[in-house]
Length: 410
Ligand SMILES: Cc1ncc(COP(=O)(O)O)c(C=O)c1O
Image 1 (cartoon, rainbow, N blue to C red):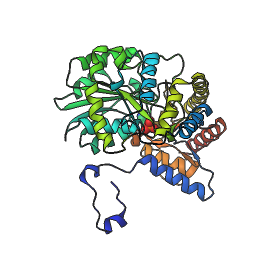
Image 2: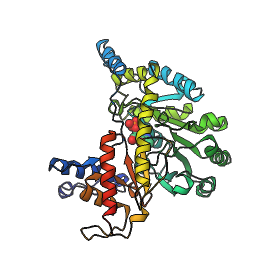
Image 3: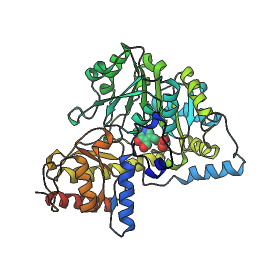
Image 4: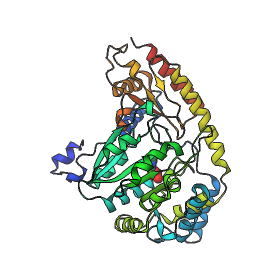
């Protein structure tokens, strides 16, 4: 970890539990891009992990109404009864999953759900299997909880999806969890029922291994892809599956900080212990807004997904027209994860050799003023992630610049 030297000089040393955790590459690139913008450079940032839409007005109104009703106090520890009821209905309506009220937890973002789950279950050295490319918070959270992330590379040929043989080979007596994310940040790859089946069969053979599924991008799927979640597909695994979701991406509510999960009662109870001594409860006002998100009109979800699909098609087509880049068509989320092996070994007009995806992304930022994130930040190279949650006009301009930057390489 890069600790601020001034702090070190002041005699500070961090706890060993955070010593392995790096400063996020995404944040570093974002900070550099913002600094360039402040210097007047026309930088286009394709790094954001959030929708460019606003939270719908009916959801904002529900928050205002909650405030005016005086719902401004601490709530029940892991979610108001109203929100838990709305989440149970959501799971039944959209996922054919039936949970009791005490099998539901609500936290300050899905990130806190993951954090609570790992803190509540991992002993030092317990292993957590994480397919890469992955959302890097997974391994960081496991490390903070003193567990051991076991990263498994899933390449583009396998659709960036974990294969049954890989899972089988990675399981040891110390394996506590497998974490799956569909559709994925950063690859946009999603698991169909057929993709999940062999993995679930492996898990059935290993009763000590629990499954955490992150369904955060469930509503953002394209081309008739049918979203499914493992606890519904394989009821025999439901008593050791934590189904994580949230309102951040589907309802454009990243700042409201509400995530939730359904899972076995004993686990949910243990997670509440962690939450009780960290945040006490999620924001009362945000919980009221989330009730409206989950129970109010849902028709805008389809419209927004159609808008994302247009942008996905635009970006994938433009990337695949560039010599040296190779982009798989993602099933969901709002990211492309494009191969860039064809540009490695080339030299920039400034005379720098591009050896890695990190070099390539640095060249795009400095030379073309487009900020994208290298695959290395997500545990798989040589790739780079584009977040296309921005206007079509900006995307067109950014892709024209990337095309020119690639053509300028020799
Ligand atoms: C795959 C994935 N899971 C979870 C989260 C966290 O969401 P929340 O805003 O609910 O903490 C993100 C946010 O980027 C994500 O990409």
